[in-house]
Image 1: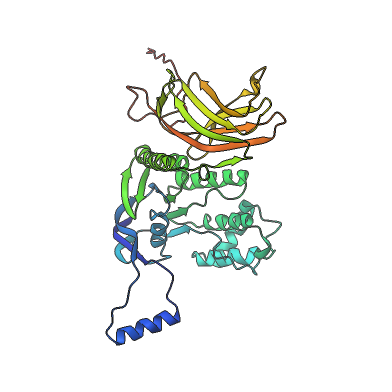
Image 2 (image 1 turned 135 degrees about the horizontal axis):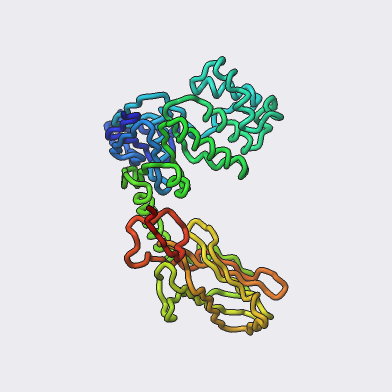
Length: 410
């Protein structure tokens, strides 16, 4: 059974600021005189989008900023209208889009719960039944009769999330609202979403930049690009395409990087001249095989002598998860650096990361622990899979050697 059917959906916007009264009068006068009025360019946030969602399906929607993800959800939630195309929906929709945007600052939390519940289609009797549960989930018992204008932004979002997820709807639309509040509350959000998906069999559409979250929660993923559906299918296959596209952009930007946009902080005492990735034979490379040796060569220019500086070299993912780091602090006798050029090499015998793009980071401290230089995304390199590796390896981050022992038991 189909819950949502989208056919040839297009949404256009005119670029530029809205015309003022003066511009409108001048344009009207030009039309009356038969003159051509210059029109602003049209931008297609959605461009002939078609897909369907089955009942009980959990669909992830991913893509880079400006790809059309949030616009699509707003059209589905009837927050905005499409320029052309059609949507058929079988069931009640509960949108978790810009949660808290409808709160009135001078109203108390209690008053806003009833107001938001009514906006989302709940009767007063239904809200009365759910009220204690809503407040308890949001952990707002102490502040529920305080005006919302005195809430922190996190408190507002927690209460709004609790209201939105209390609606007993067949279809749930979620736009980047799962990572709300502190870490403990984020865990509660994930648990509630999994309960809605697994226990209640809701049809759910999730837009998120957290790809690991999308893979975990969704059984199908659509990748948007330029307002179009670029890929639609298995979560691992579609997200792999997204990662490849992202990595290509990162590597392209890396070639165009400057000291300013490479995220470098420096006291000016040390300058990074060159960073290279090395294979096991000390050759400069831009890719290594998963599990092979990884070397990183850092060429520095010291503008003044440094006594026994500590050099830290490490790696991180393209979304800034730190993976590894080595420090010269482990050396019994760290050398002094004279003014001039120095080359530092860091090597790990095995870099056990799965295929993807990774980045180099470097930090330098003086003998007193003062930060002299720190940089991230200084060099991007690619890890490629082992020859003969399974086409669709299990979801993971590390590639660790393993032995298998399979016996038939009669």
